[in-house]
Image (cartoon, rainbow over all chains, first blue to last red; front, side):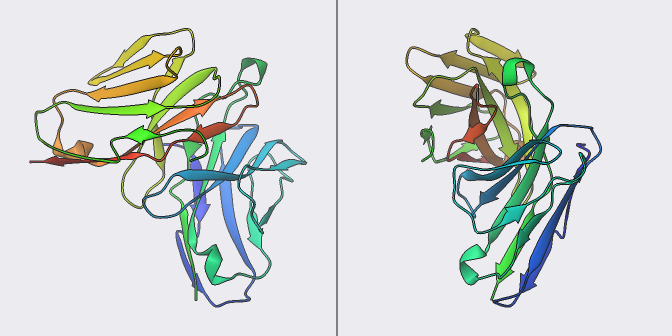
Length: 116
Length: 110
């Protein structure tokens, strides 16, 4: 079992609400990631962080924002949710690979967001 | 797709049979990884193969990598109903990011 936790697992909210998806890991990993996945589809990287106070946008444009104030915590925030934000959001972490290479990712169980 | 294609998109076999999934990618990589995802859950890492390796085994899993063809395959031998899941390949680059394929949905019938 990976020591990475996401809350909430399921969230149904109305349009215009602000939401924060929490992600915490106890493995001391520097690298953390947020992926977005629609049912039966591939994962798209939307945000990543290589350490405290470091955040970057991923390959898929997203209206969400992230912060990395502590190593173990990488929350994702949507200021004003819309139906188009309905999706599953997966958080992951990894150790620092040698030479910046990417090793194994440890995933949380995901947060399934539905915006009505 | 961000990176490449997985083939087939869906596979249905009987318990005890072997399952083979293929993954193609477009750019140079430093490693290729396979993950498994049960319905509605997060992904679990199965195996990592480096760009200078051609084949790797882990239990009932066998992974091959052909960098000249930019392709990889995952073989699951003697499949079980519990192997029913989606399987994703992911390519690692020097950027430190991991890019996922579209996945293959495997159903193993008891």
